[in-house]
Image (tube, rainbow, N blue to C red; front, side):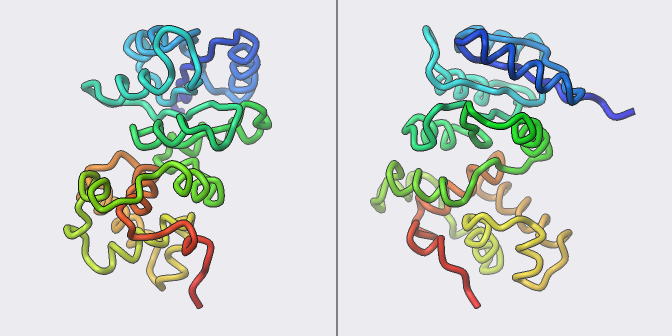
Length: 227
């Protein structure tokens, strides 16, 4: 029997927590903890070891951004974190992604999308719409060489891995990458795993951010597709 997904919901609005909990429970997802601020979220994660955390950014005491940093910097297996926001270009969303969050959702998300998002990030994928990601990067990412070199050194990647990272940053799935590069999906997954390992990244969300911050890809180029 498949082990149910375990989720912690952190939001300072009780109505939001209750609504999300009901939606997830209806799909068989187990809500193992709720939190009204960042400190409670950190404690809930330590106590329950969830697979996924739904994390509101703007909470009292410790906000969601700092809570995300502390949770992901801890020892042991860290959960995947989905940022909750009311605004898709919230500057804190970008900061949370660079801190290791696996994506973000607007609070007016549909029940179906919420459930799908939790399953998606649990599988190790990133919850990032390519168009919104480009807008976030364009507005908030550092655009100078010093900031880029402080982030990651791409020289450890092979030419093929750089190519995979470029397409990954444009929002292509593994299946789309396989078709574009004429490779098997298994081979693509191997390349992605090696990229994450070499750059010391948690998941595809961080890889996308790094691709932009290092100048490997630019927001304007991301919208184009090659023949």
